[in-house]
Amino acid sequence: MNVKNAKKPQRRFDNSYIRQYNLQGYGHDNLYPQNIMAIIAASGTAQLCLSRYEKFVEGFGLNDENLSAMVISRDGSTMDDLLRAVAKDLTTFAGLALHVNYNVLGQVTEVNHIPFELCRLEETDGAGNVAHILVHCDWQGRKTRNGRPQLVNDKNITRFNTFNPDPAVVQAQIAAAGGIDGYKGQVLWLSMDGKWQYPTPIYDSVITEISTDEGLGNVKYRNVRNNFLISCMLIAKKGVPHIVTTTNEKGEEVEVEEERQMIDDEDLKNFQGDTRGSKILYVELENDEDKPEVVPFPVHNYDKEFNVTEASVTERIYSQFHQEIFHAIRIGKLGFSGDVMRDAYEYYAGEVTTEQRFIERAFTSVFANWHDKSIPQNFSIRPLKYINSQSNDKGNGE
Picture 1 (cartoon, rainbow, N blue to C red):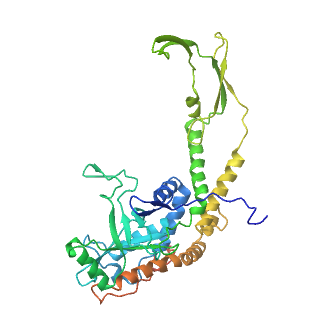
Picture 2: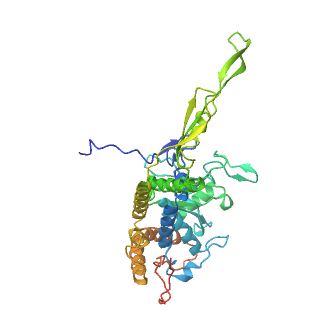
């Protein structure tokens, strides 16, 4: 076996080009972020791991508490609010987006979070750069504003200049917009996968397992709701013919005999799959005098296979989030004590330092041009620590 002979995996992510808006599609349908959000939302295990990941990246906020409390936008949002929003996007999508406003001197006066799933990249130019970030409130076109649907069209898409804090560039953009009142500002768009590359989150490679986790939950739900009804065979009378009126090729009305099934194929499909009822095999009888009956199938006990699959899926999801130590605690391998939890927190806090440094660099690049030059420039994040009743350390436990 070598690379040439190995089975080629199905591509999980494809960029498309949408000529109508001159943008790079985020996935084949331009809805990759929305799709993974829906898959994650349906898996309890993935939601738990993602929530823990997000919490550790946010840590216990910025080390500089005065900086954390600084108001950075006209709606009263603080640096602490911004950190929380950015940590959520970075862990969910592996990217972040910030809207930056300026004054006439080209100084930053306001910074707002833009949900990363709302952003799309314009097509790259000849040098491989992107000039504008396209933002829409709902790329699925389902949301409404003032009773009007926000369809995906040029009218509802806002184009922002990409981040460039050079005062000369900013002032030129302000002039091109007809003045500061017409200027929309810039967007800092960053991806952990590289410059102008749509990112895939760390859990993308276990999307199948995450979807399987949802399916396993559906099977449990179905069994409980059906009182663990076993699979069976339904034997019923064959449908009796009935007369219907139709039109022939000459346009004349004629009566024809049509056989009607007691249960059609679509009905049978409703009994199959992880979200539907128990499986039923439908068999027709020729004789009218035969009565319908239900014949149970011999049932194989799949509890062992089910439990093994569930355990394997759960472990794979935890592992992809680098949370093996929490999985070991969950299944009882390491026990549960203050020392074990402190070690687990210390370990995982070290696992998310790359993401924290990514956020720190983003904040530094934006706030280096803040209009008030006296603000501190220490954007380091305080790591999360396990706190119990015997500890006096300031932190936040899980």
